[in-house]
Length: 255
Image (cartoon, rainbow, N blue to C red; front, side, top):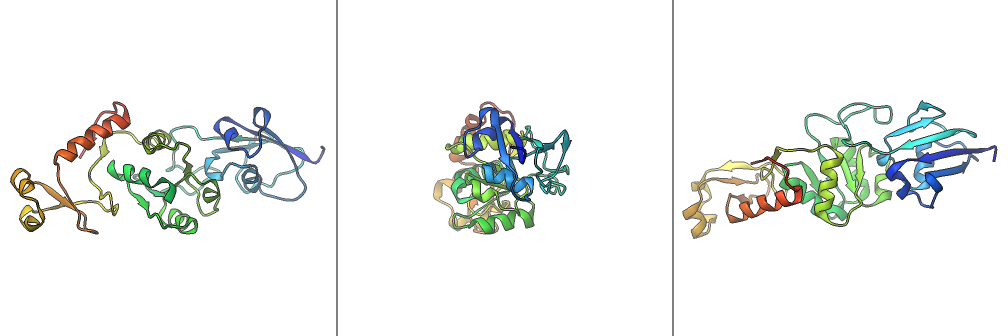
């Protein structure tokens, strides 16, 4: 097959190939001019999972045109993924200082857990793939989805394909993948609206509090979007314990 190129997929990328390939090697017939990005995605993995492409011993970008006889190595991510430094594949880094996310409808619980830890995670269960891609591109967010086809949209440069079914394991994967380490800004963001909470004077919300809450608690926060009120009640300690269990002994949780 003198008109074929050889593509070697490394590591976790092999499990994303549409067809089994021994040692992740695919012999690909080059019958038309196509970018390496299009070829890779035709074979299965979305470009968000690709973090290095070597063509005949030289690094190339997604726009590289596959040629007959080329030997291509496709590299997966090495954790933690640095989204703040430009690379050949992603020359436009995300804005500092903190990673922000946009989540697909199929990972809504993950979005809530990220908000619980204080991360900005846009989520709407009615959001379509095109809207998610637009938000990711225009607002500089990391797209999170279990849908391979969603992450193949060209507007999305930074993303993570979620493999696990369990939301807690999904969260652990994101924390490892992007190097999100303590201390976290837990309980600083509205779980419903994603907005940062603001302190509110107790006297201004007294009519909204239950008798025992009025009696035993003095410090409150409110979401400026939906008006939901938060305080460090028994649910707070329960959730702190739950977070510690999810993180398996990670240390500081800041409030």
